Amino acid sequence: MESPSDAPASAPSGTTPGLMGPATILPRCATGIEGLDNILEGGIPRGNMVLVAGSVGTGKTTLSLEFLVRGAERGERSLFISVTEASSKLIQNLSTFEFFRRDLIEQGSLVFVDLPVIYDRLGLGEEELTGEEIDILIRTIRDLVRSLGAQRLVLDSLTSVCYRIRKDEQIRDFMLRLGQELNELGCTSLLVSEIGPNPARYSLHGVEEAIVDGVILLWNTRRFGDILRVVQIVKMRGTSHSRAQYVLELTPIGILMAPHLKGGREGGP
Ligand SMILES: Nc1ncnc2c1ncn2[C@@H]1O[C@H](COP(=O)(O)OP(=O)(O)O)[C@@H](O)[C@H]1O
Ligand SMILES: [Mg+2]
Image (tube, rainbow, N blue to C red; front, side, top):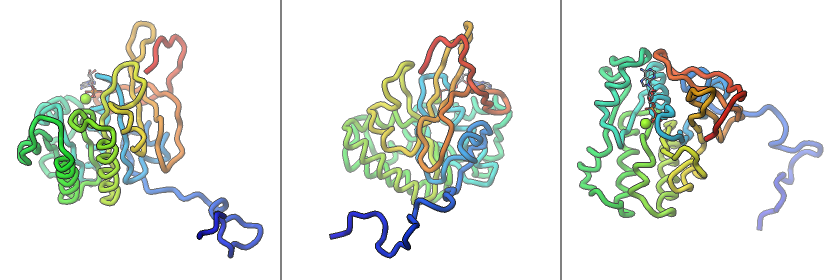
């Protein structure tokens, strides 16, 4: 039987291995969104799977797309898997932002894939996915990421995928396996989670948020009649980070963030 003590017997007296010495900084995947990178000590720890949760219009898709565009600009192959919106329409919307570069798509650094097309090709029906079909889905996403050498992935949205995986234990298994596959491939991922305006949790089933490495929460709030977008990092494994609220602005040059001054605040997430 193993010793219950954490310290190996050979540890020199007066030292506690693991508790002393400089902390290790894990390699980062810079989001390219300056405000986020500043509060994340340079970016999301590489290989993390992160939930981007918020209600409609809070900027989830825009934030995720900027993360990919900035990655592609740095030479990291970036993959967007679209579930609800046709990617052609997304690209059309994206082209109203100055930070978007169509050439990134033309040169293959930024790749869009429509999940319904994949479902069709795999012969997966409209209904709840069986255990075997969930396996196929995980393998398909893994193979896509692997064959493209994608270092960044966005799934927009995880909620739409989870509508078809209805049992909590199957969601848990799907998330754990997907997270593991992506982490092994060194791929950092954002999974979009659509939630209501006053959510009790950050995801459809509540299971998802426990498994992911991070949760970035977005919400709308009213101040003096205006609707502001607010962002907060609720959780991020592998780094220390601010948990303060920041006002998020979607501007033509990309997302800008500023500390949220709470005077006159009327609402929360
Ligand atoms: N070119 C643009 N410049 C600034 N804001 C934009 C632009 N295009 C869209 N938006 C804003 O983005 C919002 C949509 O955000 P989106 O990222 O799609 O939200 P979500 O995915 O959370 O529903 C729109 O309601 C609009 O306010
Ligand atoms: Mg969206």
